[in-house]
Amino acid sequence: MTHSAAADICHVQLSTLTVCGEKTTAPDRRITEILREQMPKCRYIIIPGADHMSPLSHPELIGVRPSGRQLEVWAPFGTDDLFNLVVRPNRVQITPAIYDAKVTRWVARWPSLVALTWRRAWAAPVYAA
Image 1 (cartoon, rainbow, N blue to C red):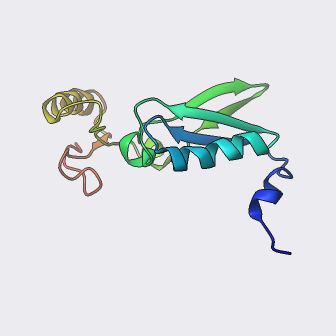
Image 2 (image 1 turned 45 degrees about the horizontal axis):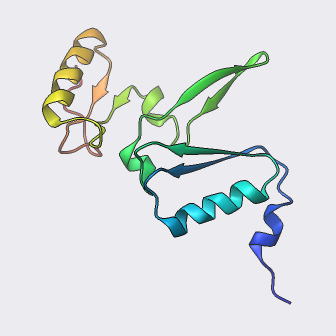
Image 3 (image 1 turned 120 degrees about the horizontal axis):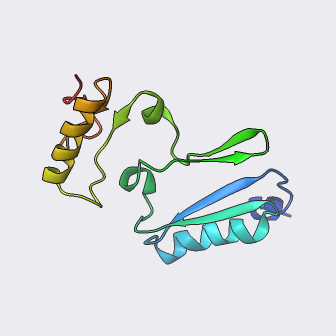
């Protein structure tokens, strides 16, 4: 008898969030669908316009909503940039010229903001005041 992780999925009793990009290939999408179908407390979200590498194409994703007397945070790719005031370009949504114009305005308004360049979005900041 062999052990299968898939057989254990239905026993997960934690609230989970499964995220899938709209442009994810069929085999990868099927994996997320199996998770959604098998885990009793699974929420499933499809990110419009995103592919399999959503953290790179949609790093700005974060959501907060009230949940009783607390806040529920949805941040599938973490909150480091949010709390460190880092802005990265979303190359799927805008052009370099639009991004440069936006970050110039943002840094003027919020001097502590760290906006990364279009070319070096995953490297050192250049728009920091």
